[in-house]
Length: 248
Image 1 (spheres, rainbow, N blue to C red):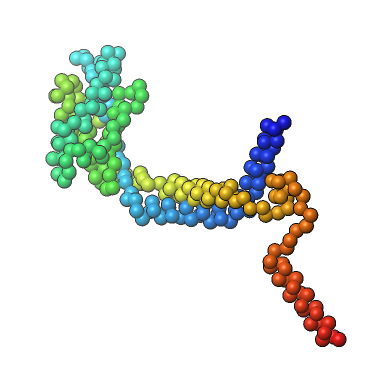
Image 2 (image 1 turned 60 degrees about the vertical axis):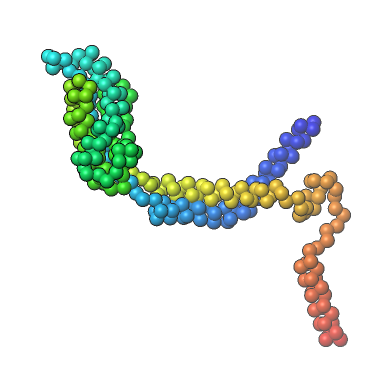
């Protein structure tokens, strides 16, 4: 029985909480719009746009008769992992720096590259991400060219094919203004709701006769009007007395 009463009380509390949030919908709306506006402005003015360009290598080792067989495909799969590891090594990165005359060391250059080998393929994707679209294209293309030129001799294998040359990116890769706007609105809404809920839970003031009956099981015999109501009643009473004297 006690468990049932506790469950009913919890349901009533949650219902009251929902009504409280609905009563303060204007605060929630203001915080949602403010959060969305602030984070959108932050992404627009404070985050520098970045651009990505991708080149692709197709890695397969052919036999002497130039006919690709199953062993060649299996070898190409294992070579792809080796290429992925060696392409970000110092010799290859240093060749890219010298070729493009970059003002950075190989550790800084390494952070600009992302290599990806899609599952069950012998394709290696080389993606360069910078704040300059032209530089992104040059980095992706030069890495592919230098890898084809340098790594086959190092690994004693045949050179891979460039399946896709890097292109000049037309659109920025990041930031996404719509994503930041939605995140800002959501954060503003959650923050405002959290503040309202905390204030609601910490407020133990009895506001109505229903609260008195709900929390203490007491039915009030009378209700004392608020001070403003009393002052209004006194003002009304004084006005009536003045009119009576005037009429008398």
